[in-house]
Image 1 (cartoon, helix red, strand yellow):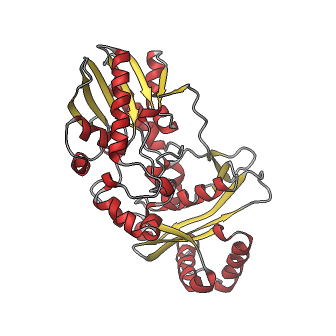
Image 2 (cartoon, one colour):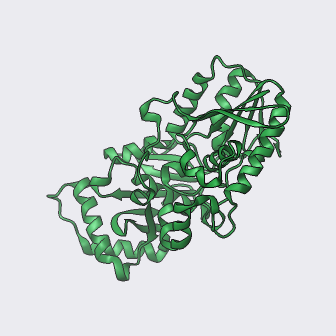
Image 3 (cartoon, one colour):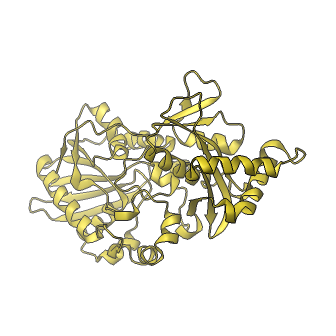
Length: 378
């Protein structure tokens, strides 16, 4: 009988930024790398005969510390990939709710019957996973396999393994990033689940930030600002930002700020965007191309949410918007100023920014993960 430790990948950009990065090869966060170390410690005394991963960077990084420590190759299998989300791919969850209200409601109420154009169903994903796990079980025989996959794939697969209807995916749920499920596969390909979604190796600070909170309560829609209709909204947000950065005693020149905003949106309308939480404007992001930095760099001048939302993971959603826009413009590096405020420092620390060579006042982040370095097999 084969023992398969089925692991959810570490925290990645999509998790932190509330975006549907199912097939998108997202970056791994600082928290994600720390989770990987805790996973390595969990398996320190457990024999492993084969290590498997989907071809996603976040999955490969999850298991890489264990593979290096054991001197084992990482075997990449496409059957471990995440569900496909069709036209939603790399959209913010808040924008999905606004632009696809019916399909978003369907996803919230019965995600196993996904109606998103171009997406796969949970049953299709479960069938794919079980086929792949049976193949892996044959490869390791009576040994132990460590397999890294994704949240929807895992919970759909667990339902199928336990003979439960796909409607039970909400009951099965998904554990924290790097949570572990132990599955036994006999020689006839039958599955039994010993435990599932166990994250006991993670300290509280490395567990999921949004635990127990409904999606509608945390997901923001981020859209380019329409200054002809929203100038007053933007002025109020800019004034709140100025109070926090410069102090209430420093005058705020609305006319000058708006003039620069109009100049920016005339250059690129996507470079100034407002975020809304449950329809309420709560922040904005200001992006630029700087003449003094290389052409493949995009600079985020401001990521601001109202003070009552700071420290809670909302600003990351503005980062996610900026990264998305810059990638589609061919930018390879996202830069920010060296943080002055605690909220800016927190966001920089959550992602793997490093000092920018040749620019003492800039931090830089590579926007693209490296391609999969291993053969990709079914």
